[in-house]
Amino acid sequence: TWDIQQMEELKDDGLTIGIKTFVPWLEESFARKYEKSLHGVKERFLCIFSLFKVLLNGFIEISDMVKNESSCQPIKQVSDNGIHIIQAIILEYPVCINFNYCEYFLATIRDRMDSLAMCLHALCHAETSSPTHNEKIHSITETLLNALEQLPTYSMELQKRADLAVPLLSFISQHLAMFNYLTEKLSEGLAKMEDQKSLKNKEDLTAAFRCKHLHSKTPALLKHISEVCYILCSAQKGIERQIETPKNMAQLIKSKGKKLLNEDLKVEDYQRMMNYVSLLLKPSSLLSQMHTINIQEFITVVQQMETQKELWEELKNSCITESGVEQIKELDSVELKDYYNVYTKSIEELNSVMDPSLYEDEIASKESIHNYIQELKEYATQIQEFFKASLFKQEMKAFFQRLNQYVTLYTLRDFSVSIILNCTFPS
Image 1 (spheres, rainbow, N blue to C red):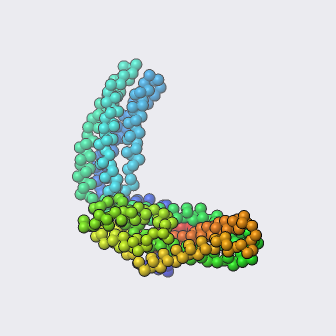
Image 2: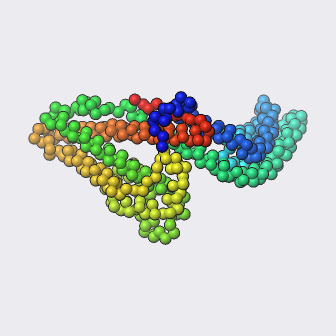
Image 3: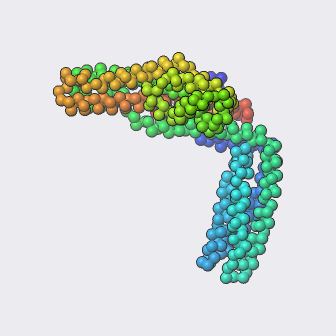
């Protein structure tokens, strides 16, 4: 683990780059570092793309040849379609070849070749009013057909070469995906904080309370509500931390299904687990129902999820958890129950101060009592949003520090350069 002092010492010799710039920098760095190792795969791609270049130039030539002839618009449309197919393939080519790209390219190349073949078949039968154009189009089409016929052979060679490089290609894909996920999470957090800048703080909300003169104990009541809301939000954040790992397990179960679960898992246990998987995939829904769910049953289900060997191994072996920026932890049932009890008691406390009978002695009309309680509820809602935003900011700053430390360690170890991420948090 690197502390802040060590990070500061590295800044003199390191390179500072922005959050959104890091993954492109990393991809370029992978391309340079593994250029020789991936030379064989890249060479096969170059052979394939040289054929795409022939096809692209041919389609462009035909399209330009007939663009001013209104009667030849069908020919132009076919040629333009071929151009769009090839341009899409070219734009997909990454800065650094990786497993995900190779897998996608090889999985889609057959359909794309079929689409190009359909375009060329149409051009083989195309006729214009100009015999010269007809002869030229048919000559170009023959050349393009010859290029297209070579693509399957080159694709098979690419498949064989890529199979030999799977470990390296997978490593690059996994690490690009990991850092893309982590930097995207931070960027989304920054955007959320920017949206939260307009939230009023506790003092402003208290000063803006419209019905403050209706009851003599209003200042003390608002202070009490504020304190309860802070305790409520802190407990909610604690619950969120506890369910982070179960949430990640739920995502794996959803994406990979029963194969990650033990074969001896009983049907009733599986059904109960899937009910909570659905809830865990929507943390906001789970939190909104937290004060009503059976907490012991929830704990039992999560602990059962943790005993699923394949599921737990899959989670432990992910690059994201290996980085230490995000950690997997077994559920602390005692801590979760403590947070749960504080959370539910805080909700009950807030509900109790919204009882109309508490204000009948000082507030005369029922309408005034109703308005007073409505504003208390609004105040409680807004003060919770303020506290949630404050706690979220603290959480994101801690996340950024962990990410920055890992990025510096990772880049120094793998590329002999210390990268310092630059990030400005909204004030």
